[in-house]
Length: 580
Image (cartoon, rainbow, N blue to C red; front, side, top):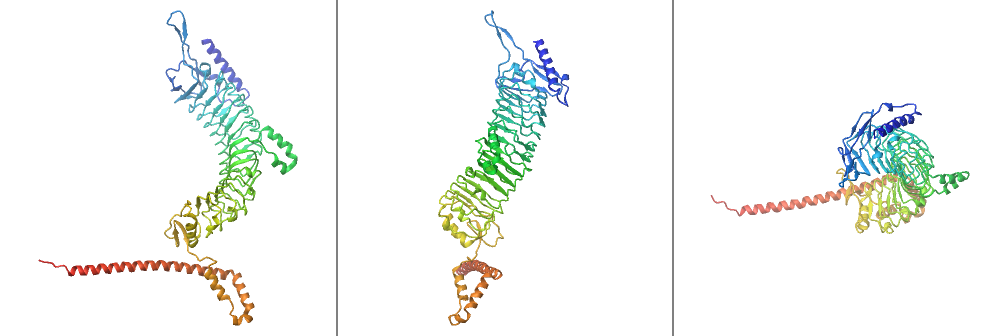
């Protein structure tokens, strides 16, 4: 046993020295490290729960060496013996322990499939620590102090499927760090300090399904990084410092070959190359230096929230897209018919011409795009169920677009400058259940009609305005409004027509002048504005007069009650006799 331990120690020192021979800087002198034997797990481990605690190796020059002793016990018959020792465990978790250097010889003694060393202050990991780790499937090294990973460091863990390295201090990973991990399915490198990844670092990961690179300092992703990961489904790159993304960064070699064959044929053939379904989720959110996004991919979900994007071009089929909180002015999808959910909130869009054919779109949010102002007329969106156009500077309801939305259930037109709509125009929206109309400039006359003919009879849900005690208008069912005479009021038109109609006796002499004066009245914007203000002032005065009349009536009623009480009091006291 002693000879084997010394041989392993010698091989470890030699291999470590050789593994650093090609490095310019060697941070620690590995020959000076001292092995600290661990002969038993019984004192520090709960073998039933497969949990160990209290191991403490905080010095950089000491390495824990698992040399678990095998016990030999005489059997009860006295003629045979039994091998005792530590219970064979498939899972092991270290808690409240410190291993600055990843322990050695661990997998010789324990045939582990899962090893959890989260938060163990691990700083150095060497390839020889994984000798005999050919049964290991899950390795958790999260929340440690690992700064760098050298070539083939996990090479002997050939069955490894899940590797967690998140929450470390990684700045450098070798191009061959993950060499040999052909069965790895999940790799988490989030919450580190990586600013660059070698182009071919993931080439050996043939079965990779999910890679998490979020919360690093990455600046660019090239076309070659995932070129050999044809099974890749989920890529998380949010909260980095990305400035550039290769257009074909998320395509397999077969798709790249199609691209090369199609290159001589410019834009038309470029759109014709339809990559097969590859990604389920791609998250590029919170990359504040990313200005332009041009991608050729198929994906279920594409998230690029809170970047600085002003142009997005997507060539391929994408089902759910969230581009909220950017500066988008240009938007293009080569396959808009694949879209089902589209979030474009808080951008700088002025038009939606690229979305002219979206037959499968179910959810569209273009709120907080003040330059949008209108939707495409005759827009056919037969599957749309939710439309949010709040704060888009609309002054009129886009009825021409709404006619192509027979399945619409939720409509948000709040925070615009709408004054009135025709409730009868909503007959085709028979499925409408939510209608948000607050924070507009409603005419109270029209708002009453909306409430009486549309919202209340059909039990439609709506939201109300925040109450402002200084608001000069009224609140009808919680919605703020002002009383205004309709511009096409019949009485006003009748009055204007009578006042401008020439009298019969002077028809012949003044006919041309009356027509000219009428034209002048119609084309003089100042006069029209004065008339409009006069009418609004008249309505406001009338409105307050009505309020004053109601107040006066209440005072009169109160005065009558007080007089009745006074009469009762005088009559009562006349009939009261006080005897002393």
